[in-house]
Length: 261
Image (cartoon, rainbow, N blue to C red; front, side):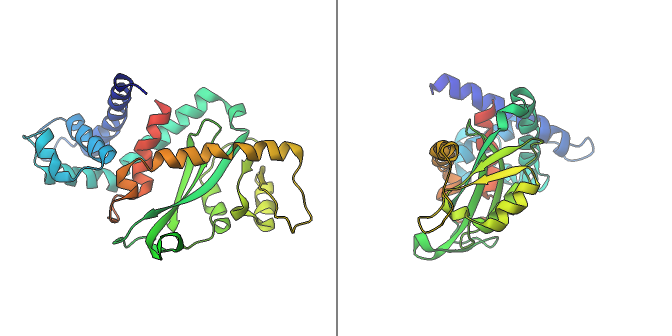
């Protein structure tokens, strides 16, 4: 993607977040901000996107102290600005795409480091039992995340199917494609009652075999893997020792907007 296109997308993301933040955070009776809300949001998005320390803000804007911007960021989290913006854009995305576009969805999980975190952390056996989190995400065929669930890294994938699907609101029959980590007859039965068909590759020692149509769908699982590869380019997700106020469920809301604008 060219630089000019990315700059246009960044501007639209800032506009989305600024509209919500201006309605939720700015009050007539409170203390006035030194700059416009859009300038605060622009600095926050840049810091989260590039993974820079908050003190770098004094290089970008000398009028605003970096602690002021960080406090504004914590207020945005407490008021659910990122989540509200994400839900609004997702609902708009569903209206534009139509219900027929969500026939096939893909679910998978990935690990992230959270060495000094306190919320939803657990030992990651892929990283020498260091503390971390697990993200479980459901994406559509375009790679757009429809819902996300954050949990401890030592939780089985199959146990996270239900909490993730609970946030999924697609009023039509869908195929949910997963890998072998989601093999569970109980989950398959429960999801079938919700008009969701859970499809996963059977093990060699199982009597059941996948049909030809299921095998074709399983070959498309690279879509959710590509989403995780792009999500982990967000440095505040992958490398930052874990502040609980900056977890994936906030940062992925910004990252998700890159798919939608």
